[in-house]
Length: 129
Image (cartoon, rainbow, N blue to C red; front, side, top):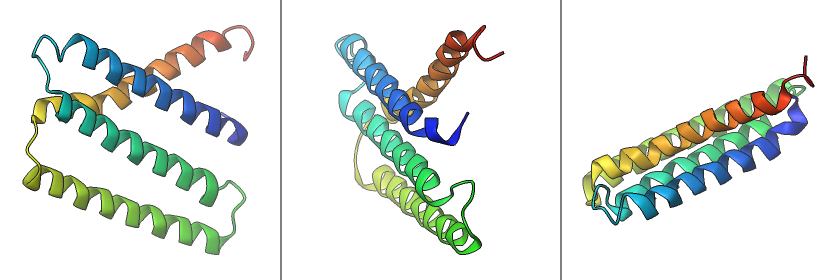
């Protein structure tokens, strides 16, 4: 994957992620299999984390970045990781939500990444070889 194509891929993955969350909200929440708050919280948590991670890598850790810029990028991404782990701890101990719904919301991003990879591979057949 070329550097220039990272931006649109991130947008497509986030779109698939949002559509998966919406589909689960419409299908499983009315059946009382999932709780809407936990599902939305997990989806929002992972969506924001993925967006910050991809933008951090895209803008700071470019393929031709100098040593100082790479160190700054690694430092900022480490801070983001610590911040999100702290936020996750606060969510688990201070906010009451269904953990299963939260886990499903988190897993939707992974499913969106896999779907994007499959669809990209399918659309690339014959052209990319």
